Image (cartoon, rainbow, N blue to C red; front, side, top):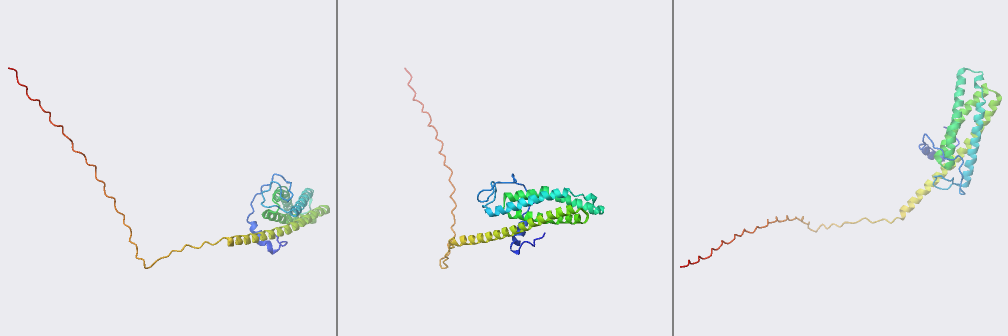
Amino acid sequence: MNLKLISSSGLCSLFWCAALFGQSVTPAPHSNPQYSAQGTPVGSSQGGPVSYASVTQLNGLLSQLEATSKTTQADLTKLRIERWKTDASSKKQALGNVDSIQRNLQNALPEMLAQLRNAPEDLPATFKLYRNLDALYDVVGSVVESTGAFGSKDDFQALSNDLNSFEGTRKQLAERLETLAASKEQEIVRLRTDLKTAQAAIPAVPPKKTVVDDNEPPKKPVVKKKPAPKKPASTAPATTAPPAQTPPAQPKPQ
């Protein structure tokens, strides 16, 4: 990837963001969302408001890129590579490059544009679009070179104009990427400063001190007394009933 257009001040942030890229991007529900007065797209999950100037710049850049994409697709369909006066291997390679460009412009690129419209100042999404434009520029340039050698002059001129348009958009995106990276770095520095200020404002709690008197005799360990066993309840002796007294004998009558 060519990063000559980006100064070294934002390289650390850019490489850090490159690690966050996923393999698939979910497009936004609407390709042309409405923006609020502060520049924040309606329904956006972005944390803070986006400046009106930033949104205006992005909308112009994306509109220009969409127009170039449509023109390039139309110009590629006009090519008659099978009629080129060259060997079969060169024709096959040119056809493969054209097919790769068409698939990128019809599938990958629209998803990236939708993601940026949903989050105008998302640094990873901006960097991903730049990488895609960088790769597109190389492949389109190869097709333009082959067209100039074996195709018609009209096809060569049309594709050359498309290539120049891609290059202009890539330069604008590189400048925007550098600006966003610098802004993110400034935000990180500010947050670190605020954190240090907040930490300094917290009163320090003195540690608790434990005083040890060396002259005090050591305390004997407290021995716990074992509870006395409970005596079993005494049972009262059984009482015997007194013997029955016999009544005195009555004298017999004479």
